[in-house]
Length: 194
Image (cartoon, rainbow, N blue to C red):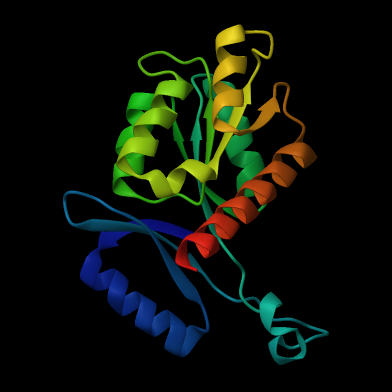
């Protein structure tokens, strides 16, 4: 995997070359104000016993999902980031809701994992702000909290029918809940388009 920041024209040219000649893919992550684009290049690996044409169509393309991880506990955020990246997620971290709101304004994430109690802007206020400015992202929230006994947190989570994982977070549970949020968001998008 190659990670870099190049200008947009170079990214477009690299994408053409990658798809046409190398069999790879370039995934654009975010466009910055200075007209640069951060992207991650993925190249297909050679398979020894199976060829790509032997696999079912749904397994030939790796679905890369973008996750925004919002938590003021930097050590936990970095640990979860590494864990999620090992499961082929692209993870952007923010340490509070205010910074995360700037990220959401720049990019539509597939999943937003959000702590509840943070400085500057708590998780409930961040959710309400996202719900107002980008309502299509509201079903993509997964809350992570260590405050199950906090009445304010409990009341908020019940009021929005949100998915929740309680700290300490188990790897299998987190990945399972992310899959659930992705399915839920996909189902809501399908019903909105129907």
